[in-house]
Amino acid sequence: MRKFYTMKEIADQIKEKRPDIIEAMAQDEIQYRIAQAIISARNKRKWSQEMLAKHAGLTQAQVSRLESARVGHIHTVIKAFNALGLKLEIRS
Image (cartoon, rainbow, N blue to C red; front, side, top):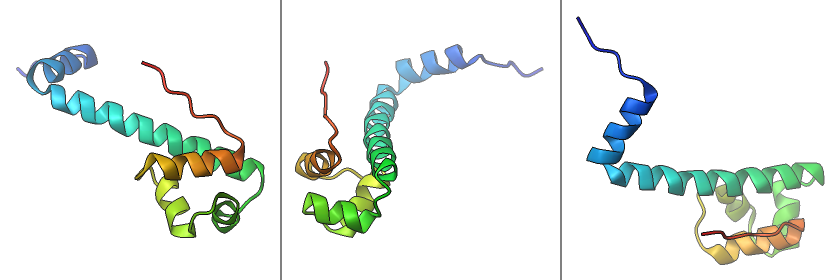
């Protein structure tokens, strides 16, 4: 008979055997939250990606990458956040 594992048991095994996976997941979460903040603020203003790009001094491709959670340079994020009136808060 197969043993079924709880999510906590699976998470504990991953933490023990592959802490690198947990670190990668945490990094992905940060990028996802940045993307969601940008999309939400842009939609509230009824701006297209092109309009945000013009206001932020970016290209539409850069905005698209940010919204796809492919965060490159922090300067790009800051430009988008500034154009949208968002604050970037870093906590430890």
